[in-house]
Amino acid sequence: MDSTELKTLQAPLKARYKDDAKAAIVTLKARGTLDDQSIACKVDTGRALEMAGLHPATGGSGAELCSGDMLLEALVACAGVTLKAVATALEFRLGDARVEAEGDLDFRGTLGVAKDAPVGFQSIRLNFHLDTDEPQERIDALLKLTERYCVVFQTINTKPELTVTAA
Image (tube, rainbow, N blue to C red):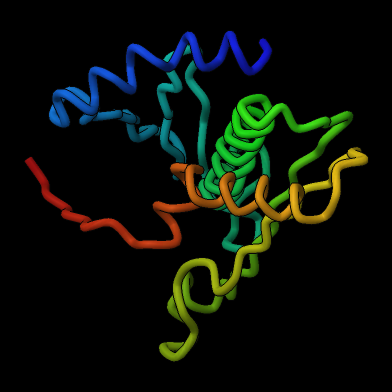
């Protein structure tokens, strides 16, 4: 897809959302079912059921997906798609590109071993490896726009309102 095709595809959506802001609000959903045989959750990805379980650092076998890894994978996927869309829109000359995310967790918090240890990622680093001959100012603009429009990055960065209920 080139810049013209992308803009043609997105133009009617942008126009609709400008005219009707409520039309731009879409509720995404994720579902899972707790496994009755092990400490795991079957996550419905919409394409397959994936089993998520404990990370080996908390006693898991490593056979199931770790939700912390899945969060980083979602960040990589979203940032990669966003970077590609922005590069396409800007007609940015991009050869091979890779996206990596890594985050630091102190599992003492998750396991309740140390009350002063936080639960969750203490830091996350998102790295792009770009094969391009574009000038640094264009690379900087690409990264700035990718950061601005990446849904997962912005969600982590701005902390949405969260609610928890049981039915």
